[in-house]
Structures are given as C-alpha cells and as structure tokens.
Image (tube, rainbow, N blue to C red; front, top):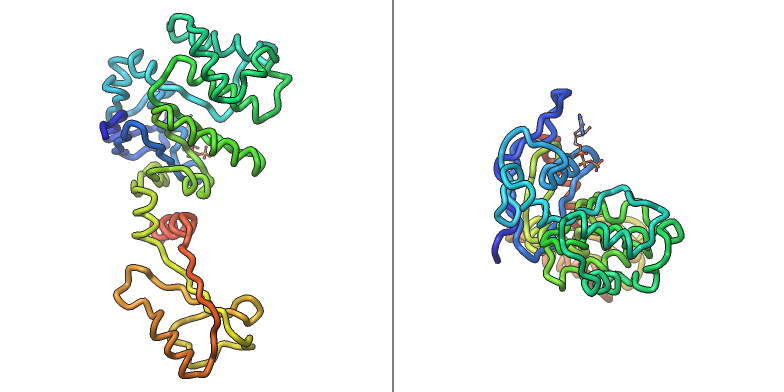
Length: 310
Ligand SMILES: Nc1ncnc2c1ncn2[C@@H]1O[C@H](COP(=O)(O)OP(=O)(O)OP(=O)(O)O)[C@@H](O)[C@H]1O
C-alpha cells in the first residue's frame, strides 16, 4: 500500500506555552481506516487541525498526497475532506445547494452527476430539496459528510463522528463509514469510543498528552496485548473459591455457577490446563468452557495506566 499522509516530528506549542504535540511521527496508508484514540485533551483535534491547515505547526512536517501542507497548501487541502465535530452549515439552505456550493468553494467544476452520487450514497437523495433545519440530527451529520466529500478528496477526516449520538445512529454511522471505504477514500477518525475503533479501524493509534504511544494493526494489537478470560461453567454452584485455587487468582461469577480465570495468551504457561486438572482433583465438575478476548478498552486503559505509573 502507498502512503497518503506522512507526518514527521510534528510539534505544537500554543501561545500559552502549552505543548499539545510532542514530536509525532505517523504514516497513513491509502485506503485504510485509521482510528486515532485518546482521552480528552490528548491532542487529537490539534493534530487534525494542523493537517487540514486550520492551525499552524510549531515544528515538523506533514505531506498529504505528496503535497507539503505549508509550501503547497492548496494541493494538500484539495486532497482533504474534513467533517468537523460541530455542525457548521447554513440551516436555511437546501441540502443539494449546500453540497454543490462546497464543491464550488474548492474550485471544482460543477458536476451534478457526482453530487447526485454522493447524496444517493449517503441516503440523502430523497431529502435533497429539504432545508438543513428540517433534517434529523443523523441526517445533518450525513450532510456534513456529503459536503466534505463534495470536492472528491482522497482523505476524509472525521472528528468524533458519533459524539453525543444515540446507539442506533452510531451503528448507522459505522455502516456508512464502512461503505465509504469501499469507494477507496482513506478515512481517519478520532474517537473517545474504544468500541468505535474496535468496530471499524484497520489500524489504531493511541495518543496521550501529545505523544503517539502506539500505532498497530487493530487485530495484531488485540493479539499482542490481549488477555483472555476463561469461564468454567460448573455443574453445581459453589459458595466460595476453594483455598487450593489461590495460585490462579480466580473469581466466582454467575452467582457461584462459574469460575473466571484471566490469563495471558502470550505466556508460555497460561495456567489453563493446570487449573482444569486442579478442578478435577478437587472433584469440582464443569459442563462448559468459554473464553473471551479482552477488548481494546482494557488495552487502552492499561496503556494509559502504564504511562502514568512510569
Ligand atoms: N488554542 C489553544 N491554546 C492553548 N491550549 C490549547 C488550545 N487548543 C487546545 N489547547 C490544549 O491542547 C491540548 C490538546 O487539545 P485537543 O483539542 O487537541 O485535544 P483532543 O485530544 O482533541 O481532546 P478532545 O477529545 O477533548 O477534543 C488540551 O490540553 C487543550 O487544552
């Protein structure tokens, strides 16, 4: 895969003296969905704003589709579509007009067929003659995406695409973003929601206090850092954990019907078979076994935790 964005040594010091980015290096591959995950104030919006030319970097360099964001601002900006956190569009304008106008602002020739295509892709075609203010919140978000895609960008930034929306709309948005990726556009999204990154991203970057702490393929990340929980479903419930199981640090679940054991999938000895043998020795019968992979959320919390401890 070819790279589409190259970020090298990016720093940002605000006028207040606050250092929001501390030397970020990152390459985004064309066609991927990259999720930038981090707590409040981590530097996500600062980074996006610099790439999109809304804020100035204090140091380092960024190229988008081969265009330097400072020396070749126009080239870089043309390659980018940005869906900001806040809805920002004239509420009285008709959907089709606002999207057509956005395209014009980028100096692209009028192309009604293309505008129709994105409105159809985003299920907005039936609403094309509605005023923005007549639309539901979910539809308004779709209009923002249509506007961002109006000039045929190669990279689409979504800054917290599902902040403050209900579960149904969030799932809708995920589906939509998945469909957009089929069109070949590279998608970078920022999110607080680990579930969102887990659901959609090919790669995940974790940013905290202006530093990119890790960038990994999502599945590799889950495998590498992931722990699993084994649930042993007992034939008969038990009231307390027998002292003989102290070495495994198990917990009781499901009102004493399950024994839960967390183990490290990377470890040479996971302790799973010895635990099961021990249960046999103790005459504790079981009828089922389940394992559950820990989520990206656990990984994220443990990373941020490790950094704090360090
Ligand atoms: N104009 C500014 N002047 C001074 N400090 C700023 C400015 N803008 C942002 N900051 C600070 O820079 C840090 C990073 O902010 P940024 O908005 O990039 O974080 P974020 O990761 O996007 O957070 P959130 O998830 O809350 O949007 C924060 O501590 C913020 O207070």
